[in-house]
Image (cartoon, rainbow, N blue to C red; front, side, top):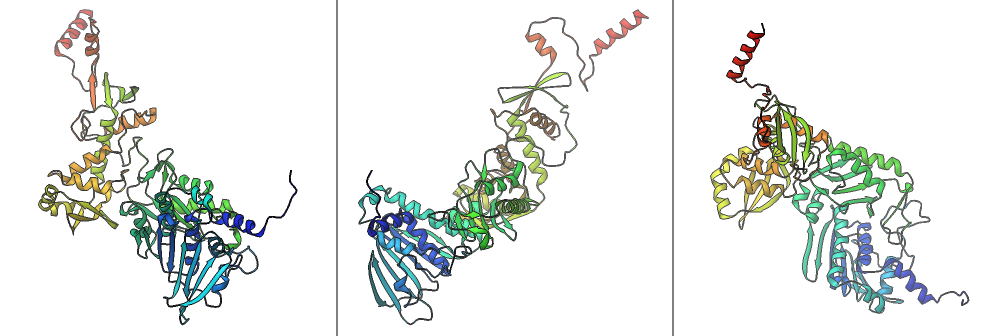
Length: 555
């Protein structure tokens, strides 16, 4: 084995720089944190060819004084850290970002504090530093050119420009979600990718994921936990939209925090599903160790358990008292108070199931086959009918829908009826309409394209309410092939018996088939069929006369 020796300074720098900057998205992340630390209210990001050819971040923050700017690209030079790491209150603090970028690329920085006359331009590549005067607006603009041009191996290790662009855009989106009070604008290869005006957390979600997602968020407020979480109908099979920031720093989701959130939802979520959320956790700086990860993607919490409990309580409080929150589909459930049965549908006792699609049951002495999907549709349809009370849900972020000529004609014919029903649309131009409100009773349905579904079916015929409810009842209803537990199957049979019209689903298909013992005996070719009495049935009059005659003979 060769003897141990100290590496050359140049190689030390290359290794250290590689710990911070491994791809364009890493450089972008460091520059965004600097802009936010400077108190920026507006940040513009531009990148070309995935940020390899050029990456620019401009902000209107405090700027860097002329006397300090030449120190900015030096390693371990920073204005954010005084003596130790015990109370870090900024996103950046190590003093390595600009030095690492300058070692891997050509770096240009133009900056001017508001009170300074004229700006200063700094050009850096490795140890070469140039300073000159420049006319510029207050704030700072950082430009990174030809990243990894001197490191062919690192350049070849990068993915395609399209994928690197996607990575850069994901980094910006994460900061938009946690810092929506800042106005953001992102351009990639001369194409506008994201534009966000300063707003609240819901507006940040609307800019990143669209108005449909933003309209299905609940606000979370507590001293330590603020943010937004999705209503139970907006679920995902993965945790890829569960975002957390600690003291403003976006970090990787810890299992403890994620489990606390999911525990707060309880039975409102289907099994193995997650929610969408953006949570900002605020802690004393002394309780957070920020210096545990090279890219600062993780932090160490000194008191994790109390924080997890605070997250659970905050999310639970947000879920309580919200309109139309029901237990997770597809398990059958009765979410309203039971109503008195008005039909002649008998109480049924569960016997079993066939192919996880039909429930076998007994009632009135007969065998009943229940289509579990059709039955659940009928139950949900009547629940929705009973829930309609004229209340509406104003959408915080109106959603745009496109109406066909036929739908536009139908809308004009039914405008007043739809408005009274709770569906509010406004012309937006170009065949588009803004949906500003929907009936409150429909707000909790587990359907991502809920608004589009409501509009399309409301404009499909004259009876808008029936059309919409019949269609929407189908989505959360238990499907054929879904195995129900005995308790859930029995609950479905009981709920069906309470329906006003239990014998057909909202689309007109039958929910039940009834077979008498006579039907079965004849099918098996049996003679001497027993005359089994059924509740509510009158015995055959001839049979009654025979019974009376036998009784007389016996006497």
